[in-house]
Image 1 (cartoon, rainbow, N blue to C red):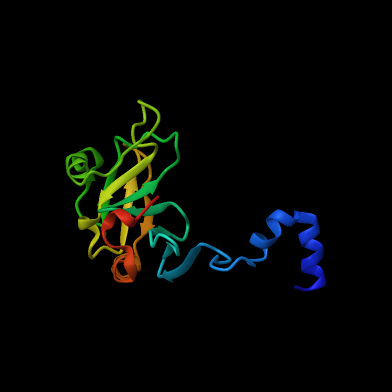
Image 2: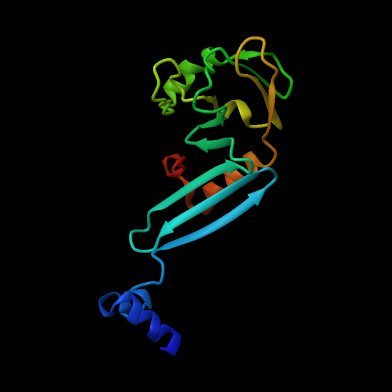
Length: 176
């Protein structure tokens, strides 16, 4: 133990010193192993608890507005946004009303859990990932008459498949 570490031990207190310096045998400096990957416009964070082996994965867009959970991609418009009237187009295809996706999202058990009854999705437009398998971008108009916003899916499918190969299967390991 160096003199700097010894001074830190005095400041921390002797009872916490052994744990702080990893002096006790059998304890890791960090109980969580973290790995970060990026591909296209998406990032993947994998956290593995070294003790229990529990794996949690977070797949999200670089800008933080899009995220993946089991079987769905959510695109955030802000907590106060009312997106129940939203319309979306995948790669410039036919318009799809968000309300028409709700039965499929319910079948997939996607947690649509806004706190406000007037905005039940919390400002998030959820899209079943099966619709996005070959998509490059999604355009969403959050309400009738609003200008559409564009969201990139470049790298999403490949990174999701890599995540599954790296231990993020079953799908329940993906968290918000």
